[in-house]
Image (cartoon, rainbow, N blue to C red; front, side):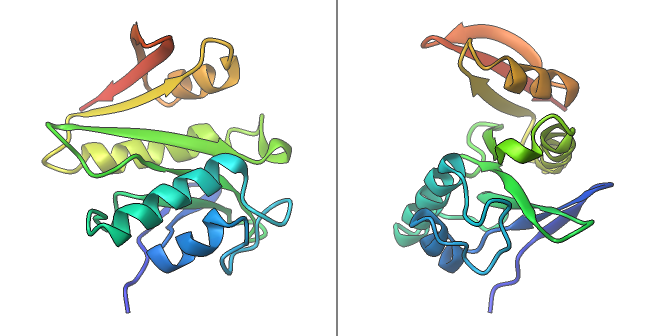
Length: 164
């Protein structure tokens, strides 16, 4: 049986979502996890669907998928964060989704800093990329607080990077 990777921060456990769990999450079911609000958010459902599809195609690499952000104080999942796939050409892209009731508490910043550090500790990764829409100021601030720097826009999206 495959074991999930777990990264710990001061207030969170970033628990890797396994492919079998992703099948449940993409359908909006909790996948055996205690989600704030009862079920995963839209972004987490979408990420779970991508993980499940990558696994079905034989392209999923453990550790380079989705992570549930589990609040240590009560075991509730406050959102999801993860890689858009394994590293390519020294770079990996990351995205995140947080339950509205968990926003504004620093959870996304804490998790993004930890997950991007984990990626940059890999010998094959020297750049972590995250993008957002121009209107999503809260996500822009999360990326900045997590050590990302804005780069030129691409396809109407703001691009942020963190390097080794």
